[in-house]
Length: 195
Image (cartoon, rainbow, N blue to C red; front, side, top):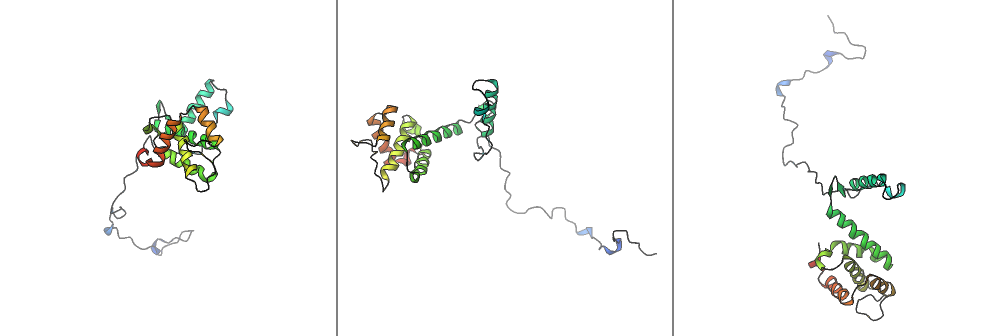
C-alpha cells in the first residue's frame, strides 16, 4: 500500500529519521564565565526617567490631591520608596538646582556653564564646612577667573568686582574672608574636596 499525501502536501515518508540516541540534554547550555543577574538596588535610580507628574500645575498646593500626586511624583522619580527617602539622590538634586540657579543669576557664558556645573557636582560641599551656596558661588568665580577670554572681575579680593557677583554676595551675606578661603580651596586643592 502506498503512502497517501495529505491536502497540504505533507508526506510522512519524505521526512528524515531523527536519531535520538545522540541527544544531549545540555547541548545548549552556555559554557564559560556566566554573568550573574544584576541585582536591583533601591538606591540606583533611573535618572533618565522621562515620565513627569506635573502635580504643581493641576492641583492646589496643600490639598489631598496635591499631596498624593507629589508623593507619586517622588516615587516615580526614585526620590522616595514608601516611607524611605533616597537622601543621596535628594542631595544631588538640591545641589544641581543650586548650581544651575546660580549659573543663570550670574549670567555665565554658555561655554562655561557646563564646566561650572560639573566641577561643583564633583565636589562634596559638606567637606568645606560652610553653606553649599558659598561653594557654588566660588566654583563659578574660579571657572570665570581661569577663563582665557575673561573680562569679568570675580576674584573675591578684587576691588571693583563684577556687579552680578557683587550683588549675589551682598544678597546672600557672604563674608569676604569665607569667599577667599573657599575660592582658594577650590582653585588649589579641589581633589581633596571631591565627593
